[in-house]
Length: 452
Image (cartoon, rainbow, N blue to C red; front, top):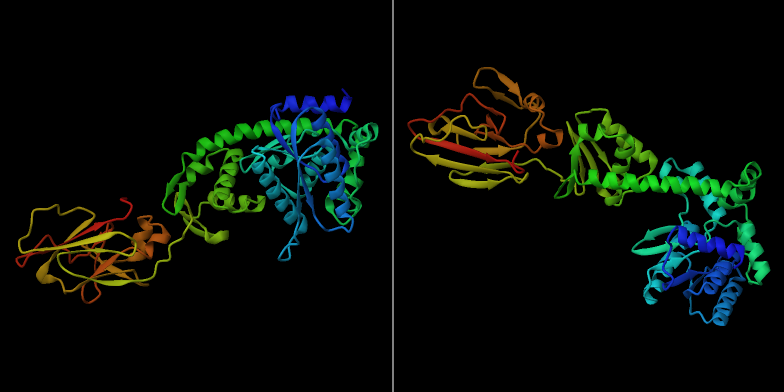
């Protein structure tokens, strides 16, 4: 067995890449990397299928396709070819092409009834990725680079060349007569990855000939740490509160977590909503959660919202829009309010024997109240005449009771026919509230949506 084949076999065993009887879909571009990969996987006796993408960007792209078809036919391996259509709208072509490539690879894997897709990423690809992320990313997890084994949309992406360098690959192709074609665009300085490959990587090699092994060891260690952190974050995830249209948690609980966990938990939460979790967004939201503003709201992409209300942090998947309202209350009826809470209005000619000091009920003397009664949202300057004397602003009452700001504008205010406030449910009763009277008693009961 050739030395490079032995390294590849050791890599397969070290990372447990796939079973010997598995069918592998090999992504083959026609370059030295993927042609060597195809040659070695065939020599090792794996059941293979070839997937080739013709990007149709170069005039000679058809020659790459022809080479792949020819080699696959000689080896008796089925080959699938996808001709990449140009993007319909202006877009980053590299990102567009990558997305379409992997869609195609997964389609071929489905046809072949396998979960394995094998690509020719090698050690220098990994080093270039780590350097690129050092320049453009701010999270330690990004330094995992290109792992030998990852899962993607239910499929298993495997990279047996992970411990080889480019020279190893060229030497192997020359030694065993493996045909390949060079893509001239790989030499273009227009792409940042090419500049890293041509100008930065050689410096690393000069400083440390073992750089690939060192970086792979570093990345493997980070990957092991991430497995641990993922398990811890999953435990924390189960402590979040999931309601209809929102995810919430205690701010004090969150701030008390180690930053290594709180940042990852926040990243997982954003990902669950389909929101990009850039380092800048994570740091901004961490600061909002920590700084202690009792009430704050922050719009997020996709129509989502982060809402802070004292100790509670809420991620709303469908933020409600509450409009002001004013509704007349009929005696002996139940009315559902726009905030989904309910008011029950009952009239009895006798005084009744029910509880008199319950915070969610009020008893009004029939002959001392100007009917009809109304329920509305608060207005600027609203005041209530208190039973103990004096008046107080509704806003001050809500602040003292730590009613979250987003609830204040939907909180029901009960008034008489002259718009005099007689009750602020759960909070304050006006001095006009009595336990009853000779003409009977009107009882209003408030059933708060959510129960607290």
